[in-house]
Length: 164
Length: 198
Image 1 (cartoon, rainbow over the protein chains, first blue to last red):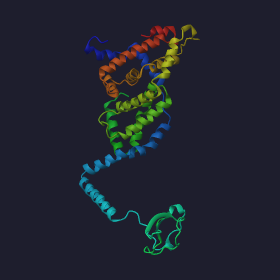
Image 2 (image 1 turned 180 degrees about the vertical axis):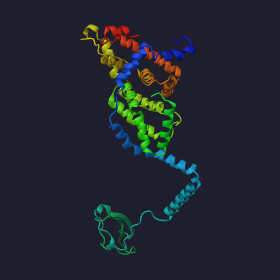
Image 3 (image 1 turned 90 degrees about the horizontal axis):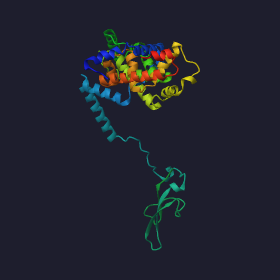
Image 4 (image 1 turned 60 degrees about the vertical axis):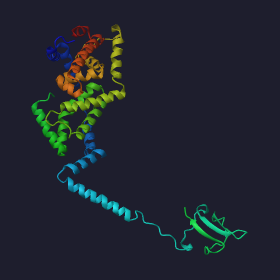
């Protein structure tokens, strides 16, 4: 293909101006020399620039970390960051994240069960031999008194769970 | 389009302004290069909607990576590199140069006497050459377009395509040989032009 190494560049450059080269150049210019994209392309580029500016998540994080570590304010930023994280950690361990719903104090405060299947009672009663028997029953299965009595009574019930 | 020192200086100023957040500078960069990049994408893909899509994505990528570019040189090779990578991806998705190659093969397979009338108008001759270039495989097509359309040097093309300079020369040689064969075999060319193909 090439006879002498030092002639390669000259030979390649001569391809720009030989007959075939001139024809290719001329026809490429004639075919595409005046082609222009529509104005909508710039509009679309422009619309998408804010997203490009903000960068993707990792890119933004890398920039922030880089700025935090390698600028003159880096140590201050780091210290403030560490203090914020420590404060948040302390707060989260000492303060319940969700406020708790207070337990009902008596039967009247209990919400009415939506479905008996969701209301589970501890049924404590005496069997024929007088031994204490505990079983977990639903509301319909309860055959004892409707109002709970003391747990010392031979028969009593206690609501274990209720609601939806 | 050939990068001059003035162009490189202009580009360096634009890059610094874009890095400082000036959208107007980016608009100026777009104005400077969009037509050339569109023509390159069009010459390589042969598809104007694809060329517009490539142009759009090219500038968005350029904007995202403006921090990484070497501001001391012209941006033309860098922007062409992005555009050609996008064009190659587009051709891969589509099945590289399927339609243009079919066109070329059909014309080669068609006997001369079946061609209703040989063409002589220069515009149609240009179409023959354009189709022949689109019939080249992507690697050769990209080199031919960069070499002849924009007068990039072999070294610049090597940097744009990320290949050694020797590979650029080789692709250019074989691309030209293939073009010569395609042009000689294209039945649309009038006899006087066929014989004039070097």
